[in-house]
View 1 (tube, rainbow, N blue to C red):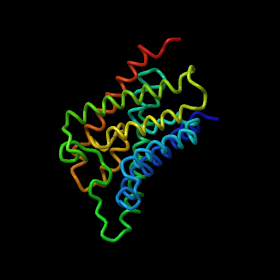
View 2: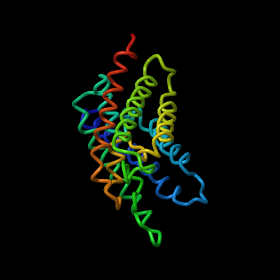
View 3: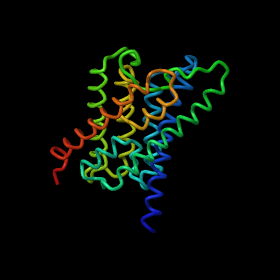
View 4: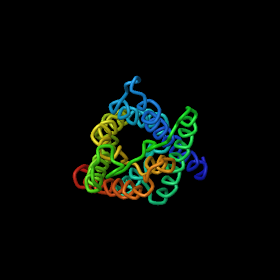
Length: 234
């Protein structure tokens, strides 16, 4: 198989995986959690995000590595697990996948009479934080949780870990991350996810989007460095 065809397959897998993450995760918040009688609440949205990563990691992870997240791609690059030459194409595919998913979700959601996009599952701090948390709080939690997310990814995919279980650990890890941080930032740890829905939100989400690129990428770099010190023991 030629290198061009192989890269096309990898980028397509990243597009599809990120599309599913945003459509499934944010869709659960925009469509299902908006109706109290459905009853999924914060717990349901958290599991929706975890399940999107778990299912697509098993589905296309063997093709592209299953990043579905620019911060993850950066972190894996810093950790020496991913080539620098592929970083920008992966990030572009992920962002395009996220925007496409948000567009389809908006098309579906706007099919209901009286629909208003509102926050549209976007991320934010201050007035845009679900719990009214500050910029500092949002920065800290996004950095810390993304760092641990990278540790989970690197540890569960290491040769020491049981084979075939990494997607479960990663999916449950993302679920836990959402359970902790939805009240603070509505949970990003993923710049592509934040970008896609911010484009359709009727709030000032775009003006705060910078944080949800800077904090997850910084956290991913920190997680990668910690792993190189602690995790690489053989």
